[in-house]
Every structure is written in structure tokens, then in C-alpha cells.
Amino acid sequence: MKLLKLIFVLLFFMFLNLNYVFGDNSKVDEISKNLRCLICQGQSVYDSQSEFALSVKTLISNKLKLGHSEDDIYDFLKSKYGNWIVYKPELNKYTLLLWILPLLLFLFGGLLIVRKVFINRFKK
Image (cartoon, rainbow, N blue to C red; front, side):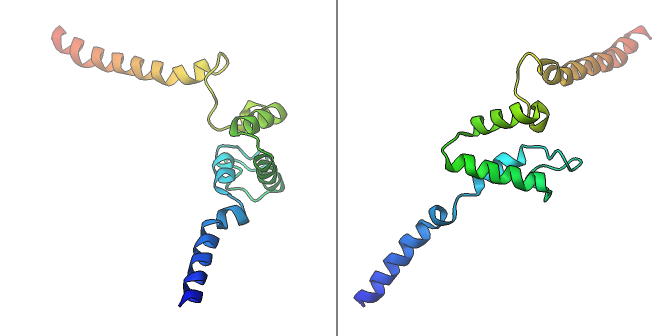
């Protein structure tokens, strides 16, 4: 019975450490989902199986093992391939119009609808 308990405890701790033994790919997957594959049209690095995508996944994994943060990896890839590689661009002076334009179009459309519906109704 003691041997069975010992085996159970060892198996329990082994399963707890599986992530440590086999590596944590969830962070690699999370980062690669936000990166654009430069070879494939419209695919993320996560979805692509091109040589470029596989090398970027390996690069991300190696940098994470070396202790680099997610921001460090994004900065490295942006310096190497440009801001276009990231699907969700950060808010800065170069991307301000990209973030504000949908809001401006929404407000402009709303004003047109209000003008058409309410102002034309009072003219009659």
C-alpha cells in the first residue's frame, strides 16, 4: 500500500511538471497568433507552415527560454521586419489615424443618418 501511495505521489508531481519538462508552447502560440506571415497571404505565423513561420516560431521559443519578454520579442521582430509584421499595431503618432479613422467614420455616418431622418421629417 505504501508503494502504491508513493507511485501515486510521484505520478502526481510528474504531471504537475510536464509543462516544465516539455516546454510551454502557449506563450509561443499567443505571440505567433499576433504576427503576420510574410510569405503567406493573410495567414498568421501560428497558422502558417512556411519555412519563415517555422523559423519565427523557433526564434520566439528560443528568446522565451533566454528570458526575453513578449515586448522584447515584438520589438526585435519589428526592427527586423517592420511594424507590418504585427497584426495589432500599438498606438503611437504613426498609427493614430489608423485608430481614429473608424471612430470618425462612425460619427460621420451617424450625423448623416440623424440629418436624413430628423431634419427631413421637420421640413415637411
